[in-house]
Length: 227
Image (cartoon, rainbow, N blue to C red; front, side):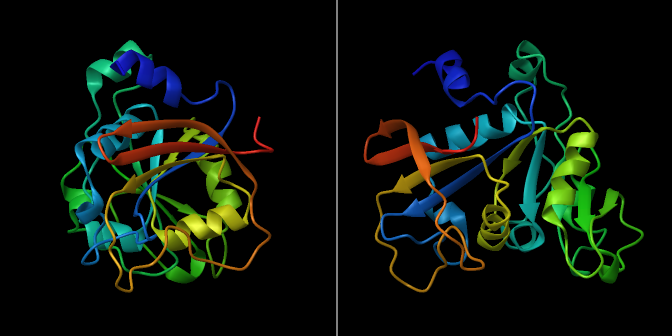
């Protein structure tokens, strides 16, 4: 497919807050190889991963994923964002209920725009070069977090993990769409699945599209009660 066709297929709905999660998994459900998602990647998955960022207002990710994957500031395709009428800046919003983020991380030192840190009062985070949102007392209230992002004009939310944040977002009914790449690998091992969290009634999804790149499948699911 052309870039224009992919942009149309993966575009966010207009005039509403929308959370799209992006994950890659092995055929047997592993979310990582040797502790990192990069071991499951492919050129096609990377293309959709970067497209997800280019179409979004903000990247939402858990602090554990930031630390394991070595997150730095986003570097979107500026030509594409200008063509689509999106601002050049693409902030990373990190969710943490603990004091694990420190100012020397690449997230803060290697970025064109300050990140957003979404935390709770009990974490006691201060002194970070970031826009700090306190959403909750002892745990992060994810519904408040999404509302705070939307209040800043960041309504197209690209959720990149990890499994605990994704599971919690699903449990709160906050995920509208899932872009899932199936890597043609059997990873076995003890890697987690893409979502981990409280036991909830399963969320009903509709399959919106399937793309194939050699042996890689790229699927797009939408929650049925999302407009």
